[in-house]
Length: 312
Image (cartoon, rainbow, N blue to C red; front, side, top):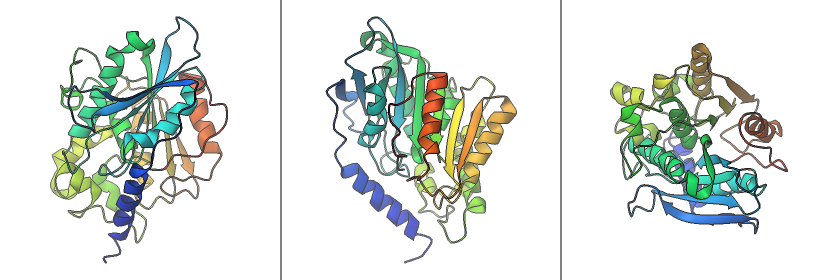
């Protein structure tokens, strides 16, 4: 087997294993509404789970933490994100949502961001029913999910990215904050940034090619449309970016590009570099502290206890 393909095979295999695992136990303090269709279709990928604290301050709207899963845009499921949002919802200080989206073997870009945008509109359209604060939605994603939340954060109001999926097209897709864990940005530069001996991102079999419909060096307009940097401006919400310096799948330089673009536009952001970190599974207690501090300072409240860094 071509050694450059091994990481891709392992990534797909491991992501599929994670997708088959059941979601975490839901505590009695949380009311779970699972498999809610945000696009009024029968597609099982276009569903979300919402977790609401049973003990909450009466009449007070809750901010919302939304998780978008990873898996190279070709694996994974919303069940991966349940644990990340449930632990915050269990405090009674926020609602949690985990979003599914169409994978690249079913639909090419921009279907994935259209799904995520439709989910954001669904949350806003149902904010009154669930007593949610539609102006305080924070999105969090890992790897491919990190890419999608970065595009969510920078492209609100961009017609081509917002799409017209679902019944709530009267709602905007603005979010109040973005937590991007090792998400791709300019995929045309991944090969020049990659560590020696790691994945070749310019092949027809690369995850980026499967997402966009061809080798990335041959479709510059598609690459540009999927790049969150394309849409950065001073109105974007604050970002927390976390990336391992030794990531073998998504080069660390991808997050450096995003942080630099946000800084140039005057957007508040922090890039936290995990010194010996790979592609998730960070053994760094500062990572959950950074997430909790970001949420506390901007929108929510800290988790009661630190949790492990999510996997891609």
